[in-house]
Image 1 (cartoon, rainbow, N blue to C red):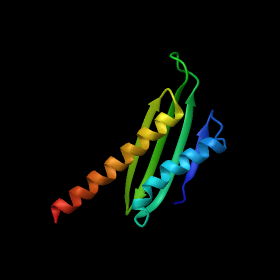
Image 2: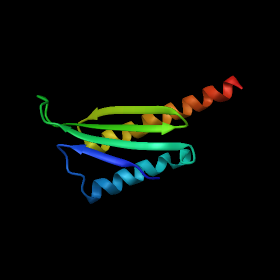
Image 3: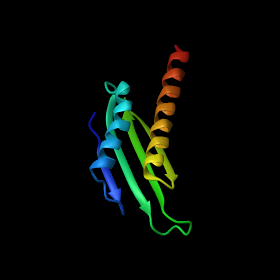
Image 4: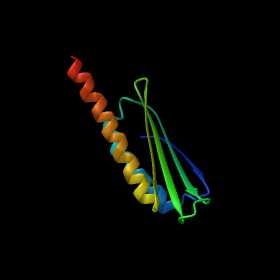
Length: 101
């Protein structure tokens, strides 16, 4: 699945890109329905409690936009939680649609 990555105050190296590819690939089960996918990665340099990383995933499916934004002390943890949040949202929306029928 194709997606765009935007980063701020953070360098996306090969290891991080491979990790992100693996996590976004799990969204592949919705692939036929996906119209767009954008990922934003950010490192908050103004935080007084140390390095805080932010991962945001925006997933467009059949005219609906699903969005997950997570902050964590580790970029990989933030990516994991955002991916899980998106899957829950899409699954819940799918179940609601089936219940209406």
